[in-house]
Image (cartoon, rainbow, N blue to C red):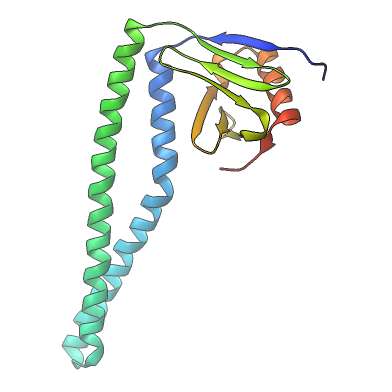
Length: 181
């Protein structure tokens, strides 16, 4: 690849922002919710053992399984309440960002150079060297770029033309490190 600079704009819209935020929220919580369902089933299993031992012959293990069941249920409800709280906060953040986008409807600027990656939207501008960048294609719809393991930039493939998308992927393959998320 020759040392050219790739710069392009992607439009901002409330729908694109909402789709990306909702996808990211679902992706981050998916594993947590799967583990939470396991807690529920474990709690039910433990309480069934408690009921059976109480019916047939109470022994030392009855209290143990009752405690384990209560712990599993309390963990389940704690995670569930945390999920609901986070979902409500996420909706508030999405609504605020969408209203901010309506006021500041500037395009997002993506710049790929031989030395750095640059991202600029209405609220911030980031410039990162390539050694800090990792990338991943998520669900064949989003290009997920991570800088310094803390900054995430998500490019919806439907939001960029095929030529710029191919050049972007080529830049990332050459300069950044591929990393599954």
